[in-house]
Length: 91
Image (cartoon, rainbow, N blue to C red; front, side):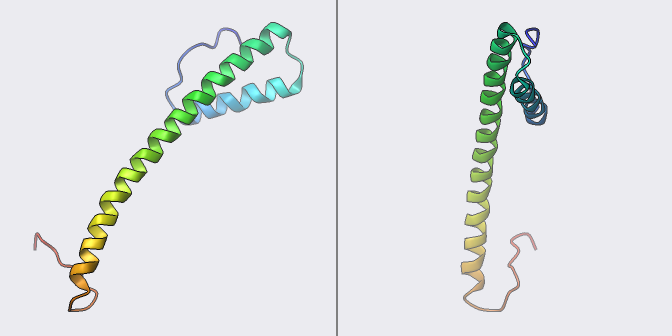
């Protein structure tokens, strides 16, 4: 456990490793030094996962803002007349 200080890039890989660390700690069989190393690694993994989730949430917010603005604009254009067909600017 003490040798695992590498950075984990994938959220899924970090989460899987975090689950493994938690399981090892919950088993209660780790010597004190290994338990401290596991706790430290778990904290690093948790911070990594939280950061990746926050990044993903921010990206979703940005995408939703653009999509919602376009949708609201199209809805306003379409509500003044001819049915449910969307107007295409490029057609």
